[in-house]
Image (cartoon, rainbow, N blue to C red; front, side):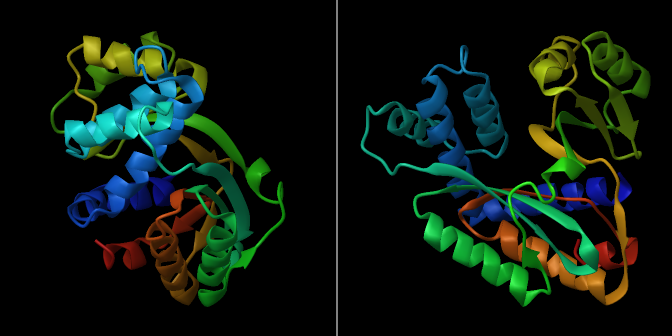
Length: 248
């Protein structure tokens, strides 16, 4: 998953700047609100909310913002109602794209997503057209400069993780969604600080994208990420390292 992991690392670095201009906070607040609406306002008994709150804290979101988002979700405060929608499509080079959104206006969202796809030689597909190309997984990221591979591997695998991959900068621990929180808790109990954690979709097979297609694909991924309604974009692209180097 070289391309997938490389793009993920770039997005995490960009996330710091996003938080400063409010874009990341907007997405996190929506996720917290929907998680609280669907499963209640207690992170202790709502796994989705616990993950959303942990992610928000890692992004340095103020506690009052988190609490207000939870109360909007539970109905204690008036707030906008968001719907969960997904779109499937294709990008330059024929890569598969699975786009997760939270929106209060599906007509606006599909129009924005379609516009971005068309602008960069992509296209919107039908439901089910690409979803089969991805597996739902949990992923935990750890700073590889702070912990040994042996310590991370032992704690993660004992808790049910499927794989631990490292590139010298970070370890990525992958698990089934049902084992995701157990793995995260086991790492924390072992004294290993988690940099980020998420439920994601991992491509079963990757498509190599180079040259102009790679450049357009990166611009498309950035355009989709910049849409307030878009929460996550998953692709099966192994993007040319030279192109990605220009993004960092």
